[in-house]
Amino acid sequence: MRFLLVEDNAKLATSIAERLTLDGHVVDHAAEISTAEDFISTADYDMILLDIMLPDGDGRDFLNEHRGRQDDTPVIVLTARSEVSDRVGVLDLGADDYITKPFDFSELEARCRAVMRRKSGGVTNAKRFGDLVFDSLAGTLKIGSKTVSLRNKELRLLEIFFSAPDVIFSKTKLVDRLFSYDEDVSENAIEVYVARLRRHISSSSVQIITVRGLGYRLSLT
Image (tube, rainbow, N blue to C red):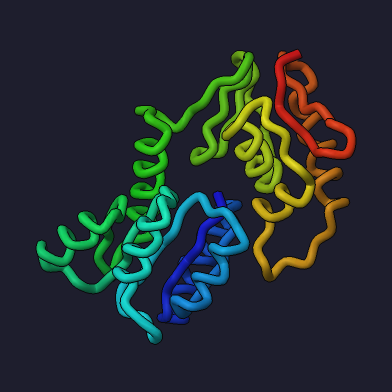
């Protein structure tokens, strides 16, 4: 997934970003609300991790404006405040979940998985398309009864295609979803990852089709 992390504690932000990146996710970090606004104006995110007390404002105002734009990107609030009234307040503003600092990273991961399950309307993380069964959060892909081993970027690319089968994704859009602003990559990298992913699923009933001049889409053969 692509995360927007809005957190002014540099040490905590680095720890969260490193752990998410290690798991194959893409993370853009904003230490201020103004930077977060710049990010969301130019990129789409799967999840926002939001601190409350920020140098240039209150995260709750950011959340309120975010929901006011009818943006349904899931938001998990990270804060040291533990009063019931604080939790109720951010949930009523539109937060999908709330975690109190300090927290164990495994709990944050579990909450992210739960929020994404609720968003997709499922009780598990696994999705099926043709004879492929893909669990993006567990990082597993099965073709029938066979488990296929994928690297992180291959997993995230497949996750994007699985999010909208038969929808065309341009190379520019895929670069935006797969890489953070700090990574200097060209669209040629997408061709490499698509080629690798095609080899992995070549024995399945699913294929990645090139739509000349437009991009790629996941389709049944």
